[in-house]
Image 1 (cartoon, rainbow, N blue to C red):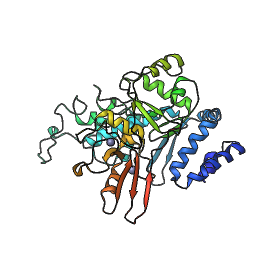
Image 2: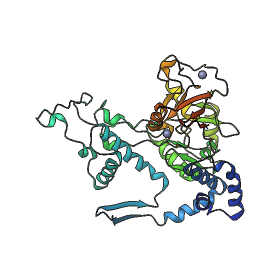
Image 3: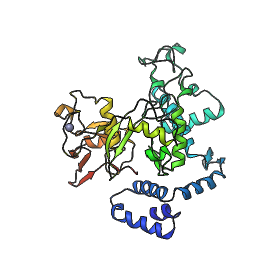
Length: 378
Ligand SMILES: [Zn+2]
Ligand SMILES: [Zn+2]
């Protein structure tokens, strides 16, 4: 069903070729992984067709409102430009900040409340419970982290959380929660940035994006104040081999000359391969930013088999625990989402990293699964 749905837009020969290419490895992928890989392959094979389909869909852009069966109401924007996904990240950033500040409800419930508040022109801060200073009864629940100046003030918890990230991040501003912009982690081939190819990219959590959407999104991010840049060099097999974190970006997308000079001036760190030289090992528990960037460039998702949680939203786990002598080094760190971090700690599971980036899981039933980093599509 996944093959049929994702390859429907290709001609028969191209569809058969892609299906043949993926038949061997499809069995080792989850349907989510297979869907994302096929989507990216279709974008790569026929980017113009994908774009035409998108533009046709764009003509149907609309806002839909309908009564839910439960008696509640539904409200959704349909066929919006994919680059407008930024709005969704902003909703999440504000909802997360509210949750951290003690607003009741799940993240989904808070996202829904923020969505409506923003559309209705209400300040999302009205969703916060009254702060302790605002009423007299002492309820015994002290909130030592709360900045007396109120939410959104510099140094306040809510404003700072959920808003830092590798690209397009917005920190707390003078406007409080409403000024949070959310984080978009966009990965695209340098050649597509330069306008030399229309190879697809991806946004963490949203999946593959065509080159036009990537450039559109990139242009918006490049103009933003909190944007951070990372450049990953890949080998012929699509795996990360080296990484750089330039201070400034390459200028607007679609300009080959300036972009090439920018790339040529970067200093790259080579990733450890097979046998680790431990040259970036640190005695501290917490890996420095540079090491964290390398690990997340090597592995873009959680290291549990089939988990697609973006590494940007994962903790870096010491494969062999730090207090058992596990080094803080490329050969002993990998991203794990909170859920699979707990899985690892549950009885019967065993995780090893025989070479940098290769994770071997042994289940309580004695099976083993080897997880290698997802290749980049370049
Ligand atoms: Zn090492
Ligand atoms: Zn996971």
